[in-house]
Image (cartoon, rainbow, N blue to C red; front, side, top):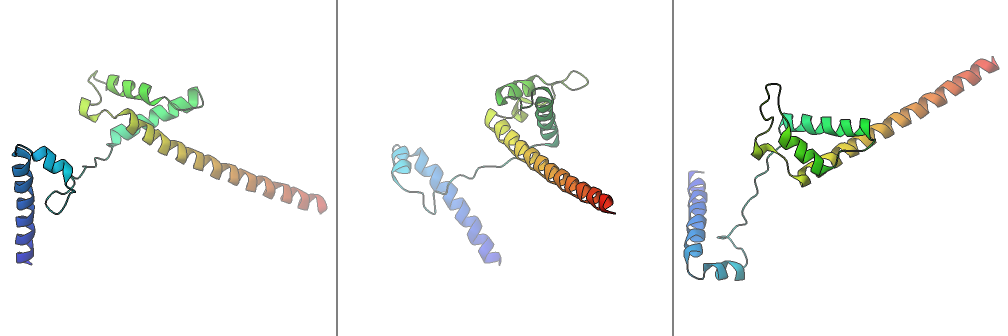
Length: 145
């Protein structure tokens, strides 16, 4: 177990050292571009950052505001600007610049909310239809008695 950990650690160190060495080489750019990534040139991993509760709440409120006022969502560009300008109760910016979402992130989040909204609406419509059928059946049964 310890040997595997040591090998993995050594492997990681070697990969980093190789990447640093090759990138400082005069033609390192060409080498990196012309060769496929192998064991020593792993793809850089993207870090995934989840939205904070404050970001989610802000975006959900904007989404609902758009539905109430216009019947459709706020445009992502407008939402992005509102997020930059948002202030808390003390007049301080609600979000740091790094916490402001991009237009694409907002668009994706609104798309997810729209899908959930549509699903809830369809479920409510189905339940209403079922209730109407049940009520009309009960009314018929009462009329037949």
